Amino acid sequence: MKALLCAAATALVLSACASAPATEYHRLPDAAYRLPDNHKPSVVLKVVLAEPLKGNALLYQTDAHTVHFAKQHLWSQALDIALRYQLANELNRRGSAWRFVPAELKTSEQELVVYIESFQGRYDGSTQIDGYTAWRNNNQTTPGRNFSITTPQQGDGYNAMVESLSLGLQQVAAEILP
Image 1: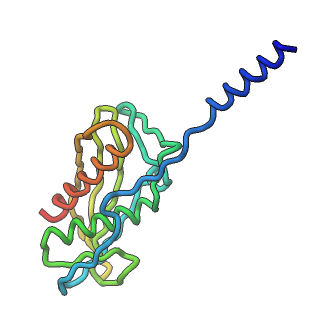
Image 2 (image 1 turned 180 degrees about the horizontal axis):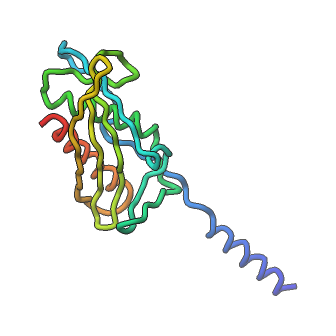
Image 3 (image 1 turned 60 degrees about the vertical axis):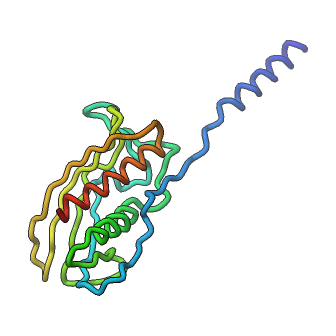
């Protein structure tokens, strides 16, 4: 009987240790859009994500060919919205001739579409953002620029990865509007 109680207690302790870790939700630091004070002509900003980025999991590339979806580290808002808001803020800080407004807030004949092909942490301690842009005006599309931004990650973990991706978005804005 004593052996049975000891086995039951051991099983109970082991099952408590095997519980799944809590899910953590991450947010880009500048993902709350701020309308600029200027009255420049508006350009609608759209972001189009590659298929692997459309889920809510953070991505981590473990080698040259493999990308993993985090199970307990998720975006707190849809990634395309977060990217649209932060990129609009970054582009507006660059002092261009336009005022960039996220697509859901305004319509305009002029649009900047940013296609994001990769947005992930990497096995070498950096983060990677790849994509390209296109300008649309009155249903005519003009190619923009390609960008491939690698940013060193400062520290370990998903929070450091999100910070590094945010810094990478600043560089993306600089590539879009040099």
